[in-house]
Image (tube, rainbow, N blue to C red; front, side, top):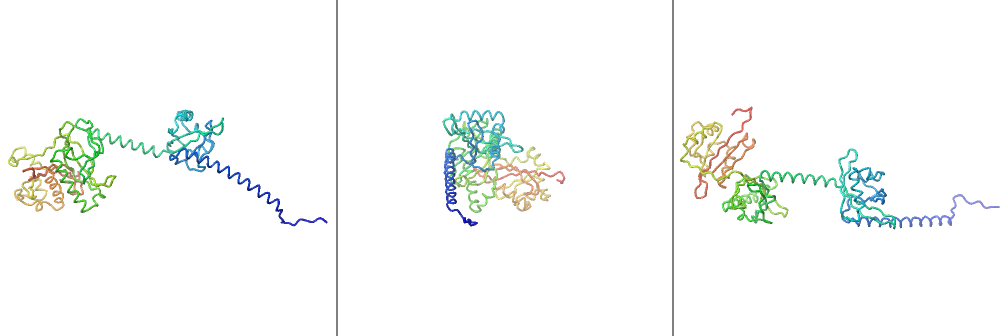
Length: 420
């Protein structure tokens, strides 16, 4: 009688053979994958530090074979994986240049090829392609291509070129330049070229330049005085750097290449350079007119020209001594502060005549001229004095190099819907 095998019984010999075959297959696949992975790793190693995107491998007939990594969210790589070719994706001129690049790959190893593609409704994308030849056999080879999307770099490059072009235009047409001065060492660096009065570039020394080699002694003393004041202010309140406080302009003279002097209007703020040093930096504008200090003779106040200017209905004029006591004014100034008798303000303190809000501003600009000995021309914003005003402040009397009197003239800029 024949024995019937039990249901669910296992033929261990057959199972063992099947497992052995399976393990052999797995080992072979792992060896092949490992070898393939090492080969592809050599591709990455060939490109060194340039690899940031992916690798595309083409046949010797420029047909797509595979790419690394296998899954990458990159528009052009996705199109190649889907079966489209470079010839279909590129403009005919770019495709012609790319074919020539591949043909001469051995001649220019490490030289990148730049091209652009327009994919559907996307913006134009820019790529950098590097390539080398990988020999598969005696009769077959592959093009191993490193493909990098440089659209952002290209856009940034265009923006930098545009900014540089605008900066060059400003320099050539205005004569302005950027500068930076180390407030501790008192060395100046020019951040952009300097133009002379004929708009020719002045020669510059490398590194920092001492003030004494750039300008007359009195201008050096003026800047030294200002720097000392700005440093004291910074040490008392270091937030002036974070607030980007812009200091009032000052006029200085700079030696020209022929020894003559250029007048500059210099304005800047405190900051830090790339080495962490405290610097005073900003822009300097070349002035076309000579800005010599105006010394006015008070004994000639009654001449016809001065009288006519003082009687202008919109021009407010006053002048003070170093104690900020009024030495004189015109009727327009007196009317602004409700004073009928002009002679009554003679000898009074400025603080006893003008209102508190404009007084703060008057004191600031007057003290600047007393200290620097240079005239100031500026315009206030509406929030300073309720309405914009144009100011001109000049030294009026100088004795032994010290300003003794200052004259201030200003005009209100009144909106059309507001009464004067």
